[in-house]
Image (cartoon, rainbow, N blue to C red):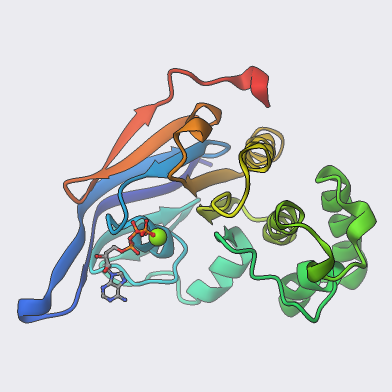
Length: 238
Ligand SMILES: Nc1ncnc2c1ncn2[C@@H]1O[C@H](COP(=O)(O)OP(=O)(O)OP(=O)(O)O)[C@@H](O)[C@H]1O
Ligand SMILES: [Mg+2]
């Protein structure tokens, strides 16, 4: 068992062909350990979403190698056959907008994927109850998304990502739609999850004030990944 949660080696991604070809990521390397919380910061169009989608096995790289946990999932071609199964089982996504399904209540939204994966109803219900207690949202279990505030719905989106017991959470600007205080509370919650559950998280953000909560800061520079340990790591602000 190694301690690596995800690793990319010499990863490249281009879009288009011929004169229209655009290299977005070119020869990028980094690795993240289990339980680490990394921010991904780079200007608009630098390739942050592209990188997350490749790590999430949603977007096919052009070349290079991606390791998720103990599996090399991509090495110049997909090596894990059902990458969708891997994605459903190991990876949780959180987006800028919560994308809850408006005509399903909170419990139904959260349990949708575990049930689709064929998990036992009793086990899922017990886990969801635990997660909702943990996020302090238990009293909203049977509400509709429209009855919750933006910050509450974002916490539900986190609950939904956790309901699958992922090893990795990929969050693309999860706090962009929130005010400062709610943004900090969501980020604290994410940090708590890494500490208490050993989940690794990459969070795209444009908000520098959230960086002290992360262990590492990744940036995209010259189409490669620069990684900095966060000297200001503030464990006491969990
Ligand atoms: N499907 C696609 N086809 C062609 N080009 C694409 C595609 N997806 C992304 N790109 C290009 O790749 C580059 C990186 O896009 P990406 O969405 O990863 O940026 P980003 O860092 O997430 O930006 P933002 O902060 O605005 O969300 C952009 O130049 C974009 O136009
Ligand atoms: Mg983006």
